[in-house]
Length: 501
Image 1 (cartoon, rainbow, N blue to C red):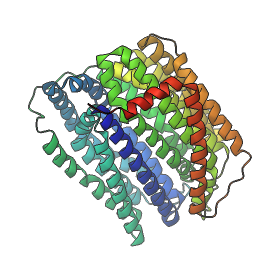
Image 2 (tube, rainbow, N blue to C red):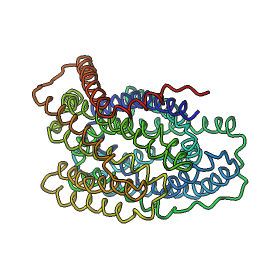
Image 3 (cartoon, rainbow, N blue to C red):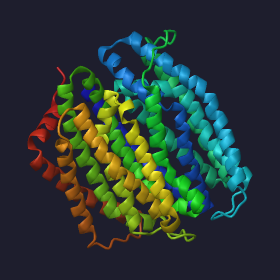
């Protein structure tokens, strides 16, 4: 059953992400052409800042997920219900704060930036409407869906949320595109998106009633441990991952934010693909850690080989095709220059460094080592903020990106060391050998792309070239990994083909 759910998680997540990426690219292009770079920069800035509102969930979501692995593995329905009761109470209490925060944020943002020249003129009333309708759908989803999504993740039913999210993203894109086509202003466009986003809660009501009839939310709430430590981790990571746009908004202008978003939309989509790959199997690792640490070590190594090969290959293709895509994507947008060869290198360096720590970060999470890694996560955020703030004045967007790279060089290595030494009680070499191999292959692909001068006049020829690059790079990565990790790859293939008896 676990293998079947993992495969379903992976297939639906990947298919959904392709659709989501395409829908997002189309919508961003429509907004750029219809409303300009300043409005697109505003939307990017607002969406990035909204990620900070997930601080309301900080500590409870991850701690609840970690707490659920053992009762789910043991099919202890009473304990599952007790954990969900505690989680539900927290979500109910904080949803009102979420709504109040959106209103306050809208007013403050409009007062500070509304009606001022910041790469473009946007009235304060428009900013209020954009911010409110960008966030209200999230409030509804936060209150009514959050607790159920955590349970589904613990059980390996990620594919349910993936399918719903895919459908909603397409419908949101269609609704907003219709609003743009009918000549609606940006506030009307965001209102249409909010209506569609909020409607998905109806499906979750139906699904829970049908598939979780045993869930008893009248049970006494369980005590979810380490929520404060997890909260610090969540806050630190949110600050770390989402300060770039805020710093650029303050120290540059909204057009620079729009440039950032044009590059970020590509790696964000691919990052989510990689994250979906990881989360498709995370529930197996979490449940296995609760049963047998020895088997977990073997499983996490197999996961590491598959994940590293997959993510490095994807970002190798992205590096080759990045600038040609941005050139084609921003064609006709003349209010700022979007092309700089350093941008792809820095954006992808960030994703590769983040990917290298994935398996050991998962290990830290499923082991519940939140308290003992607080100092390291705070230091990572501090490095990012200090380097970014010092560099942005002289180097703009490049300085901000370099701040993230500097922090990741420290923290990714620290996570790899900690997970192997402190939790698995072994040398970190099993992890490093995987990343070193895939890094060599990535650098070879990057060097080879330097001899190419790719430009495309339309998306059809771009897609043909991207498909060819994907096949070539994919075959190289697969062949070399099969040769270097023969026994591990053979075991992966055996596990994938093994039928349930």
